[in-house]
Length: 561
Image (tube, rainbow, N blue to C red; front, side, top):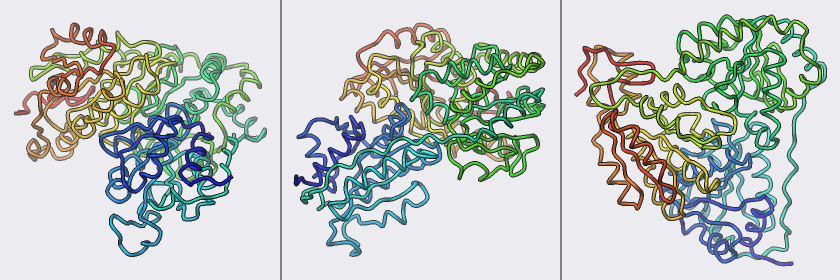
């Protein structure tokens, strides 16, 4: 049967279980969106900025372990969206981005907004696929999804010329490729079991690939917990993956995030074996390539990741296993716990004691605004067992990781690579994907005015996230780095911000607006925010700049205007 390319692409998206796409309307792909709207089988979510659309697709991919889909126009549209490609690439998150292109007859002429996407996107995508022949459109779509979701997940760009959508083709929709689950050799599993059995102070890091496994199989968390308990192992979720292990579990070995506090990292470094279970390993997790030291770790190191190309790329592991982390967990459980596993109880208890002390709801009041710790601790009291929390990039996020004890069943979304502006659109995507559940976004005043405009998208589609904005009138993270690295130099003029009344700003979109100016207003203000169920809520928190992070303050002699 003959069909247009627009119809073929729509049927291909449906075959890949795509039920919504995110976009900013563009002329270079209007042939596709007009057909999608007419067909009405896939929701087209119209966003306010291409970066917002991209971040929403990234979050959607993280929530489903299926590639999220964004559609952007050529040239400026794609350029705006590149930050989301960068984030998905570094965060190992599946994403398919459909990109408009000039008409085929104009290739190479520097036509309006023309770019060479294979060159432009070579460093932020797994592959760029150009569709210039109608009969290859569905095949290219299937390849894009397969590449985005396989091995180390990531973004794939599919380039679609403006004049291709109305072309006719006899090609049939290409079906999705089956998901390939990599596996470990029995000999490697035996060796891992032996290494874990002999270790007296092992440290197990769990990361993003385990989250992917959990989205496919609900037994993952039960199996991980059983492994921790039977084998007496400390489990440490890695940077911005806090939901992978219950923070109240006695085997919680501490959060391996960016800049781990000295008391905890000092104890962790006494480990005699490190197992990275589903963690890609980055500079943030490894504490700037010092633990484990790159390229040669200072302790026996086992790397489990579902892509042989990644294992050994930076670090030389003593044992590398290109496999699904859940398959490795199940294989260890079948082998049975080591007879002398109880020898590790003191090691696990010691790490857990430090973790619990760091998690304590303690903070000092500040004179220049609310200590953001008070806000985060109050929010934690209201979080449901299935709540979704997002954060933007910035030091305010350290309060979330210090004071919220995440539980398995909750979801945390953020740009692992630290791209600003992600928190708001990710919250909108979560609210659309998980209607009726709590969605809470923590934003800084910098990030809020980068992508905060997507609150309009939330209002348009009936999403109702709670947006907690920390307003300390500065780019706090950069101020901290300036202060720490160059204490003798002034830095305020290079980081200062002039902000709006964010509560009034929120109300102008149709959201509820709440302002918190002092600690005495925190309890009531947060309770009011959680009581609103039918529209977004903006909580404008006038916070301290002196308390630069959850762990560090400017010296009391420092003057911050």
